[in-house]
Length: 99
Image (cartoon, rainbow, N blue to C red; front, top):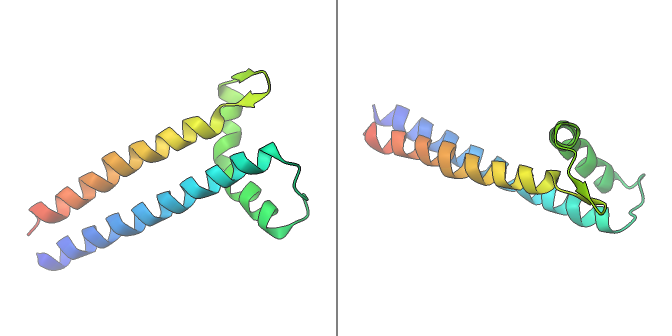
């Protein structure tokens, strides 16, 4: 049973790292929106291509543009924090109880 517990704990850790990395990409995307970066820069294109599938639908469903401010990164930021606090913590708790 400890193998299953270790597997669930490892999955929780990997999900936590992926969500943290995505959180930093969303922050980078928000910072890049304040300047005019080179759209052909590979780093800028990577950040845009990774974050746009999540930010785009939120931007279309919640047209909150007050004074040119895009609130979709804030909503994604809160959703990622929720997933880290709920999903990752639940998986880690499941791993602890499986022992």
